[in-house]
Length: 395
Image 1 (cartoon, rainbow, N blue to C red):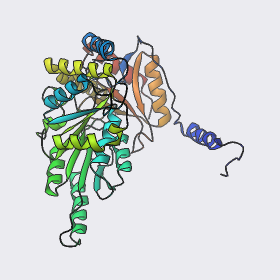
Image 2: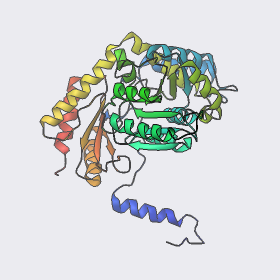
Image 3: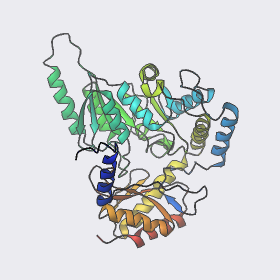
Image 4: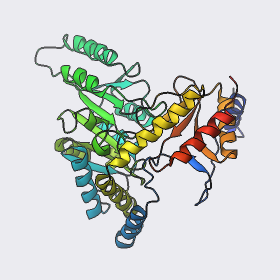
């Protein structure tokens, strides 16, 4: 369609109309400070976002260090709190070092782009989170997108690259390669086959980068993550990214790995060098949550119990739910429009749930996305399942 010379944004109206017709319009829904709804939509897996110790730590950090970090981490944006959080997070997860970013999104962009580059190969799972996908795009590397959770497909991609490398001139260095995967996939909540992925990557001398956004605080010993649970923590060829905004109830992100990798990111990751440091209140809150989890490791197991409780009740009622490996329970909907209506009906009945539609879901299947929280009671689990079943649309 030709551009209207008198309206530079006329094309936006056309796109909005297409979204309207497809039932894919998204709208902001501000929540009150004290919502009466039962929350199965947030990522506050351990129920720590409002924990008194966590909020008190956030307030104390703001009082001491100020509301903002005042600059990039390399100028004035690093505080003693940042350093303490990095040290304790690395120790908890079993890595040499860690680096805190302003968001998990920024951490993923940094890890993928700074560890690859124009002459590298990145092998990426088809269902990876958007932040990993954008990291691939920014890396300028060659990207091989492989079928979901398929180590053999990763092997074939690396094998093809090695075959091409065999044609290089003698003495020419083989290009570096990166295998990138979520630990737990955000849409269906299934876990990646990390041990198998690591074995394949090592066979070809590739590094493994794993996004623990949905694994930290839920999987592994005491919530140390899926990588720790797979026996890969601290490996010299494994790097982990994480968010502080889910199980730790705060905000921000981190990259964990060998000390030389972290030092490399400090010197080359654009989302670290050119971004304002994470604000002190968020750092203080994340540190308090981490210490709570360390003191009360049973919180991680409780999340998994709640998730399986929801799954069992929903499937027993005949709904098509995906068996959860961590805290996310995915329930299939007949269409985008019915998914939106289903979520709205749940809300009207006092339950807040997530609603995933294309393009957020790569397979085009709309879903309700339920996030189990470790602080839910058995009565609340039963209530939530009852509402979802009662409001389920016809196929």
